[in-house]
Length: 421
Image 1 (cartoon, helix red, strand yellow):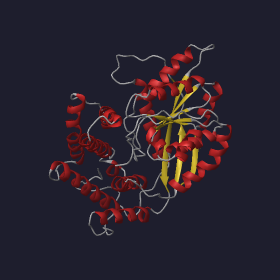
Image 2: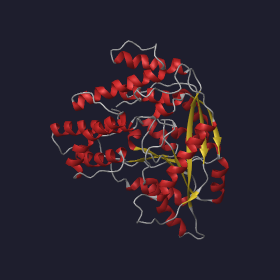
Image 3: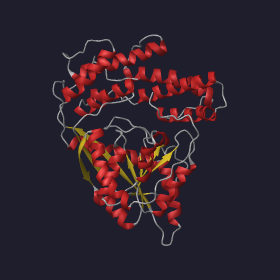
Image 4: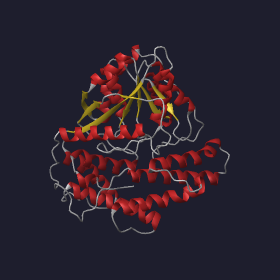
C-alpha cells in the first residue's frame, strides 16, 4: 500500500503567492523533471487561445484536467508557462510529508494542500480566493486519484464545482461583475518506444514473482490477461477462500463489496456512495480521526490500519476497467495496465520512455453561481465529464496510433480481460 494516508494531525500548506522568479525556475526545472523521472520527451499544446482569451478577459479560471499519470501536475505547470501564467494547483496533503525540500518546492510552484480524509475548509477557502482574485488559474484534478487509464475518466468528484460556484457568487458581486469559467483540459500520452521490450521486461519480473517461467512465447495481450487473472485470483483466495468464476466485472464487484460492505455497516450505518472512490473516501473520513488523535489502543490502531489497507485494495481493483485492453489493445493501454501491475505489487512503477504528451485546452464554460438542488447529480460536473471524455476520445482517434506489434488485434472471447488488485 502506498503511503497516501498520514497518521498525524493535518496542517494546511498554503501556496506561495509570488510567481515572477518561480516562472523562470519552473521553465528550467519542469522539462528536466518530466523527461528524467517520467520519460516525457516532448509536449504538444493545443487550444491555448481558449485559455489566453480567458486570461485576457480577467476571468477566474479553473483548469479541470484528467489525471492518469503522476506527472500530470508538472505538465499543467508547463501549460501555465506556455501562456505566461503559472497556475496554482491543489494536491493531496500526503505529498507534502515526503521531504522538506519537496514540500518547499511544491509550495513555491503554487501548489497547496488539501486533506482528502476530511473537510478541509482552509483549502476550499484558498481555492475560492484564487478564483475571486483571478490572478492565476487554479488546477484541479476532479477524478481525485491517479487512474493510469489515459483513455477513460473515473467518476468526477464535485469539489471543483463547489469551489467554482462559491467563487462565482463572490465575483458576481464585484464592480464591475466578474465571472468564473472552467476549461476542461485533456492530457493524452503516446508511447513511442519499443513496446515489446518495455512491457516484456516488466512482465518477466511480475511472472517471476508469481513463480512462473516468463511467458515470452505468448502474445502480449494474452500474457497480460493471464497475469491479471492470476493476480485477481490470488486476492480472491486471500479474501474469499477460493478463486471465483464468472465474468471479470462481476468478480471485481464481488471482491470490492466483500471489502467495503462490512466497513460501511460498521462506520457508516450502511450508507453507500455511488462510486468506489467516493465509498473509500467516506470510510477513510470515518476511520482516521481517532487514529490520528491517538485515542485508541495499539490493538485497535492495528485493526484500523488493516481496514485502511483493505480500502486501498478496493480502490485499486476499481481502477482496472475489465474491458480496457479487450476493447482497444493500444500500446498505451497495454503499458498502463502493466505499470499498474508493477505499482500494485511493489508500490513503484519504473520509468518508461519515450512518451509524447498532448495537452488539449477546451473552450471555457461559464460557471453559474447557483445550482438547481432538484438535480440528483451536479449538471456542471456531468457536462465537464462528457466534454473531457470526448476530448480524450478525439485525441486517441485523431492520432491514428498503430496497434502494438506481436499482439493480436483483439483477444478471443475466452481470453480474460486484464485486471489486478
